Image (cartoon, rainbow, N blue to C red):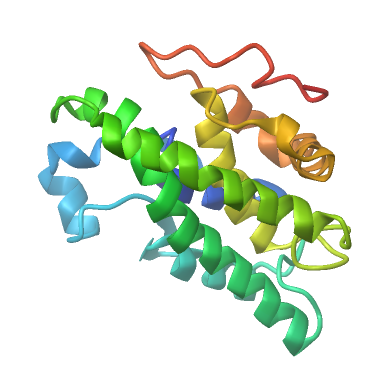
Length: 221
């Protein structure tokens, strides 16, 4: 059985859900609460992190490794471009959002406001929230700058870079922390990604105790 252990507002889980949906790979979604350190889940992934994908008789962990496996084995809807240079750019940008954006923005905004409450692990730190709100501005400007000269983030075709970025941003958009007015090119790009069928299940997610803004699931904002 194909099964994805995930958290609805985990950007790394959302990235893999987008990849699976784009490639039309059907899986059962199993919501996991990593902070509970469930023994059966730790047997699947000793790091205790989501996502974890059971597929083809394998147990795959870490979103980058999961993506590379799916991209190599499932040839439909390729998410790495054709040339080495273009693939390098797609991987560079995916790493930018998985690492730099995640640590400078998502950890300070989403994890402080949502994850701490869900895990009952303390109260949000205002200093970190302010830091995240400050950091997101230049990341949004960077996306807008990229999109002024490209069809998609990494070039002329949709790639893992777009899904890595959109996964982070969709989590933050759920809590109303993205200023889409900073750049028309940024907003147009996100609307284009958000309109893909692969995005539908993400937009249907609802987190108890947190209500998304009205535009969250609106394909035209």
